[in-house]
Length: 427
Image (cartoon, rainbow, N blue to C red; front, side):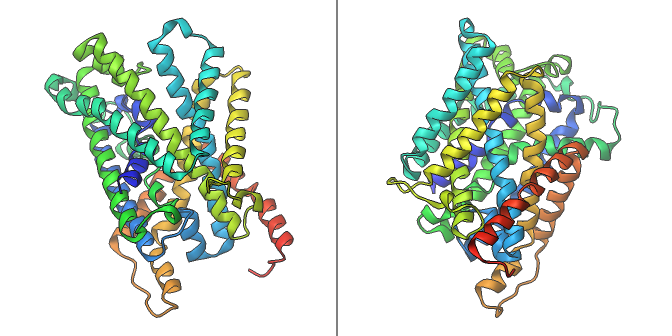
């Protein structure tokens, strides 16, 4: 259970959380309210995944449940989009790690060194995952629990340092309440991506019917608590006009409270956290295509296991695609900031579509498992989870949704080719 919980917390508490106070600062107290609301929505989603894990623990997470509930083609689309969102997010996490290393050692500043550290971080973690799921889980436990200490100190002890005058405005953005809430939805939801992580390697988990539900809910509660109190402290310590321009809000807040030693400790925590998040997402980017390949929906090479019993080809192919994405951005003129903003939107959009599919899948999965004997009603928790996913998708905006739709449609030729290859034409 400790390893599964660590994977959930490690995948959620990443770069989206570190930078979020700066992005949320223009919205004042409304941002804190939205953290709580999104946390409640994430818990509803977590409960739906917990229910699905109890009904049918299967490797593949959202893909496995979507296929079981709705059929092969929806399952393929979810697996395709989910896989793309995973390997496309790796560079963002690795860049956050590289940036923290450079902050600690200014002599290493420079675009070339950022690229070197980014690629190095990805491939070191890939090598760890190639040693097996047990090794990946151990790394997640160490990195996750190590990083919670300094961030927990900021979120708890930092409450003694806040200036209450920083919370005088509820919504200083100037936007209407609904519009501001919609804008905050993807910014906060990005930090909750990974809430389903414990369900993906279900085939390698002992007692999954019991372990996965508990790990999922516990991981979400830990992360949501850290998000709410961490944001309150950073907003309460740093003036809004300074926070909106900060590139490392938690480090800046720690420096304001505890001096250079505090700043260094947080930078180290960011490095550890980034390694943990990279490790968890690397594990998933091999498991998802492996599950789809075993069902005949992805090319069979993704289903091959190495001597260490891991989908090595899927992990390596995914890492190569992430590497190419980094190299393309490295030679481009737009820089990493534009790249980061685009990937955040795409990752959130690509993730909430599987969430929407899975939110209402419980009754259909139960019917499949019981042979149609037991078809429970859709619960209020599942309805809330579905509406939560739809509203987050709306908040992502037109451009990320358009790009995400194009990426999903590009998977159709792969599905058709795979169907013709296997001779499974009947749907």
